[in-house]
Length: 475
Image (tube, rainbow, N blue to C red):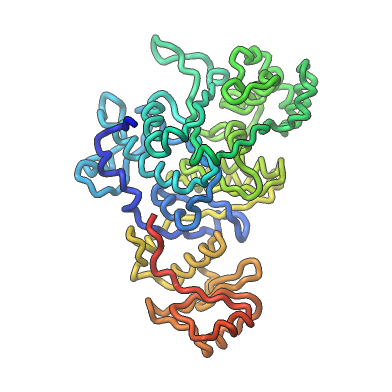
């Protein structure tokens, strides 16, 4: 199979292996709820993805990302700390336009390659990944995805039309650009699960063969808009001339309700409609309805959804919407490097939880210093609280507030208490004397280097012994 080559490729092919394993530290003041498996991670997504590997490798069911399109008008910076003289020349420089930065496409590929490798490792065998791009990088992106995921895992090229909302226009005298492209890949085509019947309120839609304004208004009420907004949605749809010329469903799965569904999508897709309907919007916001449809096609129950270019948090918003609608308990992991994480995404999701009565909550985390180096060996300067935090997350997939850790007690979750006996590497024994001082009641997990208590005694007291993890598997 042909492969894509570019400046710096040899330096980034194994760059994901060079990234150390950092700690996630919960920020209670920005989080919602005491304990949640929904995560908003503020930090470089390459380091965040590596930090997630020990816990989520092969467990993420659906990935949606909207990476930098590399239009030349953006201000993203190539900042990966790779051990290569060629790439070091680029570090810290803002990627510019074609005429001023002839290597910007190479930089984009160098940035994407290690991240896509980690995303592939995090994806479950029956999972799916969607990558949204425009013409600037979509063809390079397709070749890159073919190389990392395998051409056999390419499922569809989905056309997401933007012309209905943003207007038919073009910079200069040229053909009009009115769509983005979404590349849909599987991890294993034989195990991919696709939930075909993903249309919301399918039984309700069957009533709309005629699509009168009155019935459309009722439909928009079903989508959560008030009566005034519903009327505006119908008026807007008729103003633009119902988009039957470009039925959106043709790009997904044809059905008899293309026109109606397209109207619904238009009503939630872009800036003009958001202002018309007085729907709260955020600069750079992705289409909630698009992401909902992607997530609905692959997830249910406790499935995990990941967005490592999270922006304003639209993917988390979509997950919470769906959970309330169908009763499932999907979890989301959002990663965002910019201040959007704290200033927009977290407040936005908090507001949605309060406003709509969501049962969901989330933990806002920062990336801290490496606990393990790139070889998987524990940092010798690791503190008790850092190791305790790591162990607690390993056990519960939630973060402990460090202020609540009381050596040797780490924390409690779902009626199980966690303890860590640690006074330096390889100096920690669980003895009868140490066990009596813990005064344990109920089930408990105790970490130490060696256990000098009979296994039968541990079992009788509901105690599980585990060795302190001084190293982790290299990913």
